[in-house]
Length: 87
Length: 87
Image (cartoon, rainbow over all chains, first blue to last red; front, side):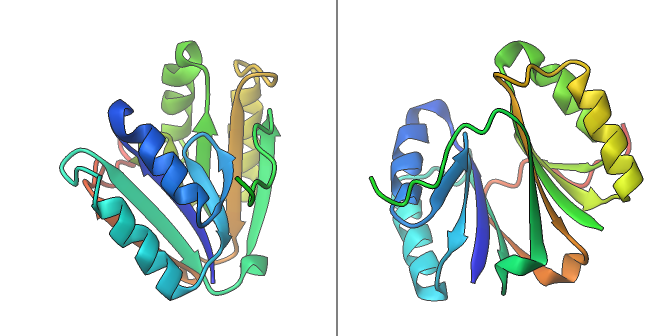
């Protein structure tokens, strides 16, 4: 499935969540990722994130769509990141 | 149509873009909005944003879907904002 993931983490944990998400998805903007992922891998991503996130302070929102073609993407302004599947 | 809007603006323009987007969409996380909007209203939102954004430094990404039901939303951790259509 295709997902868009956005996080809002406290400063001190931002580096960790960024690095963690990059293992699974493509980084497209500051705290925004997108990409194809299976339910199993997404679960793994969230279990991993929960190990260091503070659920009282940090948040992750995931928008899931069965197919990417249902979403149309428009970028205005600087396009900060390319597709960075590799690390 | 249903849209998800995420912005990444330089600190000094963050307040402006936040206030601007709230006129059109629901604020759901730090720099993330969602909601139903027409093409005309979305154009208006972007024309307005372009008046103060620096296109070399700031960015807006919009994901559009014809129908909200195509997207499934999952929130992990703190749910910072409710639906805040009113200002």
